[in-house]
Amino acid sequence: MARTINKVTLLGRVGTDPEMTYTPNGIALTKLRLATDRYRRDGEDSTDWHNIVVWDKSAEAVNQYVQKGQRICVEGRLVQNTWQTEDGQPRSRTEVHTQEVVFLDSNGNGHEEDSPF
Image (cartoon, rainbow, N blue to C red; front, side, top):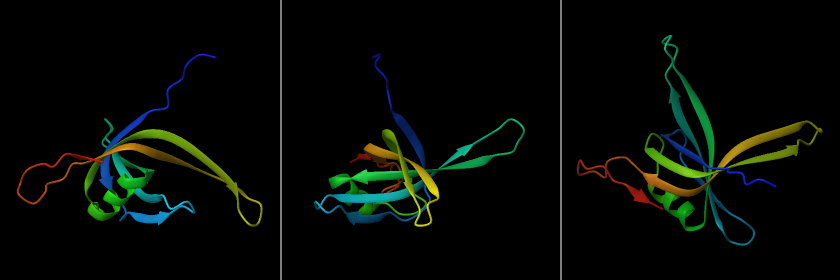
């Protein structure tokens, strides 16, 4: 089988405050929504929303330091989750499971802060 690549890089603004939980094995898991803008020639701009999942120590750092409105850059892979509702309706959700998160907003002293976690 030929080699394939599943790699995503997004730079955007956090649309929701991060929500952290723990797996049954005690691994931290943080979820948030990331907005990226699309600028079109006809002037009709739009926003795309992405479901971001951060794991382990990075999840704890994101939960502690990231807030709605901040700019971050994430790199990871796309994961498609499917399930059925209680009444049998099929549902699916595409998520970016991160391998790296970089905080891009000012650290309060006027300098950009690039902090990979």
